[in-house]
Length: 477
Image (cartoon, helix red, strand yellow):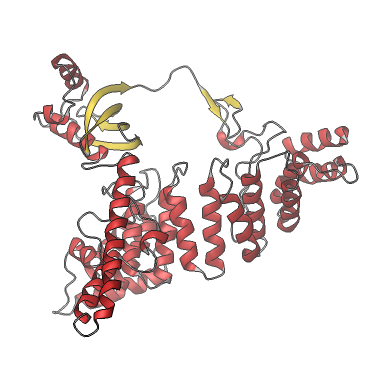
């Protein structure tokens, strides 16, 4: 390595002078030298300059350095670069490679980009599988974005009911700080496609009620169709619950619930035909085959095998859900009941672990806010026998307070074992970037620019290839 050239390139990179950085980094490698360290940084620079094809080449060269590692991040970067360069088919292979790296800490990034690549080539089934995988990745801070994209795939496949449930779940996992207007617009279009006119108008009203969001031409057309349909005396849309139940989302069976709020773990598309056929359709097929048995007795064995396979899949799914920390009622339901029952002056003893002493139970009740007007479960850390939930309660006197609630397994459900009040840190703390380097907390995340040379972090580029963004490069928090 030409150390002087590399140091000059790194210095220019840190100063934001990408053109100068590229010139020096291109001189840093000796003839025939393989250096993932140099090529990774060079790829980041080229991405910032919008030179996506050359960036893809640089990331590919970095992948050739087995000693350097970071295969998942590099393959993801290369896939994004190819996607931005208008080569989605080539991007697919690189992004699939990224998802295979078990050491890659944030695979949801590769899955989202993979969904974008499949969408661009018109393979909406595979795109949907990728978005689904992004949504259930525990490292994904925003599953709602992937779920919204999943809903779009369902719409492209003509599955409006599934799209409705995807958008509804996306709303469940979007935070108050994020705009939900666009999701409500998509939900309205999906409802209209399913002839649910009242629900469509309600969704469009939600999308525009704060005055900041304007409906797209497609949404305006759907809104007009809903109003026209409801103007006819015979128009009736029924309840949303009945609508979803008729489509196979009955009895808490919600295959689009990636974080388990409904009590059922999202089944694998490979195991249940999630993108090809619903459980209700499978059951109906079994009924149809039994009726045909009178004329064609040879088909009876196939029907029996299908039924047994269906039962085994359900049993396996429930076992996996129990092992993964799910149950009935869910941790979220127990925690919400704890706070609301206490706020109304009710008896919370039935929600507490039987192993607690009376003193412990009194201490838990003393920690809970009296008269709380609202409670939000921000997240749950699940395991098979113990869980912890982070809760925000709206106090009767105004303001909010955070709590950590510990739970223990009780049969197939959960009970509370401890409640502690959480207070924000007052010592300044530190902000940590992906490779473990700490930065002062007062440094804005978007402005942090340094990271160890040995591990340039990954670079994100927009799928459209124009105005590509670089996220997670050297020093991005």
